[in-house]
Image 1 (cartoon, protein in one colour):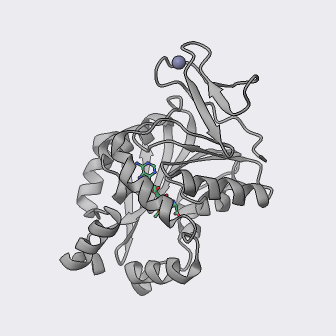
Image 2 (image 1 turned 45 degrees about the vertical axis):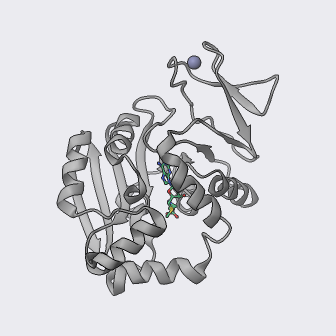
Length: 261
Ligand SMILES: C[S@@+](CC[C@H](N)C(=O)[O-])C[C@H]1O[C@@H](n2cnc3c(N)ncnc32)[C@H](O)[C@@H]1O
Ligand SMILES: [Zn+2]
């Protein structure tokens, strides 16, 4: 696998940094408590909370089709309407305000669509997701493209196996509305983000097409998705410790930027 950087995984049981097991390349292991995390297809599989099982199985099934332009862009345009930016990744990258040397965490990275877009502009990107199949595609696509400063791991947004203040930016694209415990996910993002670091998300607002109860019902039924009101997300960000949140809503597509206070 092409990855050359070490994301610095930390044991949730005892706080020690995990090491690649030299006697068993297919695992990372805690030198203190002995915990062994299997690595499958180049992707460490950390334990995830039981609430992550449903989104993981939905996205495991969607993985082969996920990046198909046949549905991704029509759905994006339906949700965002004519006002949505042509390229969501461009909008997210500009909100991240990158200088080039940043360590970035891409929470709920899926197949690495955004991870690959950010990699050339930063020092490193770690993509985490609960879906093993999405991650396998992410790892394979990045490897084939020869991208060396990315790594992928199975982790849940609300249980990050990373050091406090580990990264300069946290990004979460099209996933916040899927998390069963949004408060815990935002708290974890805040914990791993260095003070003053930026958090950027693209998510769904209860507006435009998602202002209609039947459309919201379909989103809930198919994807377990719960869109936010801007006021609600603002309160949640503040409760997790973020400051200076700003919002840019395009249709039901909501772009958010905030700073770890
Ligand atoms: C719509 S996809 C977005 C993927 C990618 N960020 C993008 O912009 O293309 C949503 C992703 O969220 C992931 N996900 C859902 N719940 C999660 C959780 N609790 N922790 C981490 N990832 C999660 C899913 O597995 C899926 O890959
Ligand atoms: Zn340990």
